[in-house]
Length: 87
Image 1 (cartoon, rainbow, N blue to C red):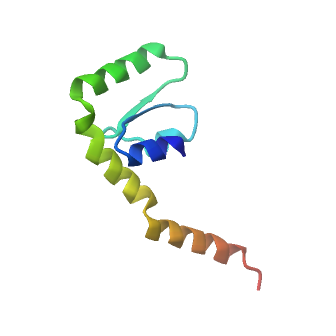
Image 2 (cartoon, rainbow, N blue to C red):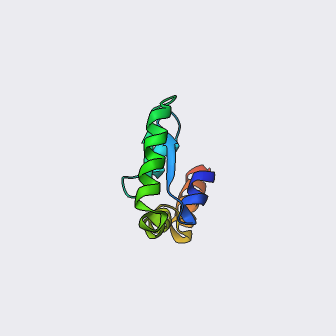
């Protein structure tokens, strides 16, 4: 959850499109690049640097809050545990 934790602090993410992280990133919170595409990584870094971190700061924090806020996570865990209970 390193990517989500960084985004919760307002840091935009650059993630590879080969793991679970692309589901965390949208067009306002970072970039998804293909594996081994170093040019795409450099391009994404350049775009973040040009726009500035401030453009992403609140968007990243709000995006992660919507995905993982405490009430939602409690509900998800409760539903998971309820599904495991054998009556």
